Amino acid sequence: MVAQMSDNPTSDQDKAMAEARARLAETPAKVVVANHVIGLYELAAIHLGANPPRFEDARLAIDALAAIVDSLGSRLGEEHETFKDALANIRLVYVKLTTENS
Image (cartoon, rainbow, N blue to C red; front, side):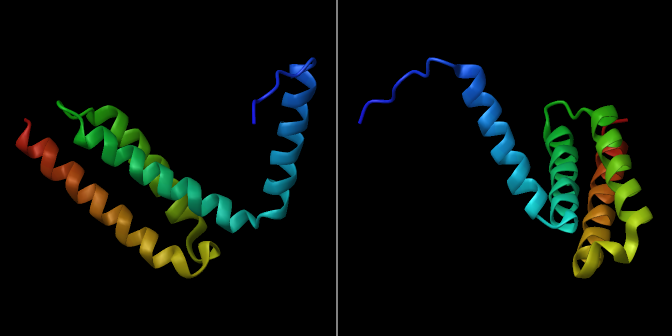
């Protein structure tokens, strides 16, 4: 099957965006926030794993992660403890790497 070009790409884009918004509206906010928490953790890990590590970028991601985990607490549900552990872990990695690279 050959994909056809649309005569109205803007209309197709608008339709795709509307569908994405509808799916997002059906998703519990806790799930979306949890995905962002995981994304921030991964972002910090990527910056810490760079050669050389990008400490300022990692610190920003870690601070954003902490802001969410610490301020929302138990509102994050059963994942809160896992997120607290992940935050503690990434902080330890940050400290270890900054100590080694100073």
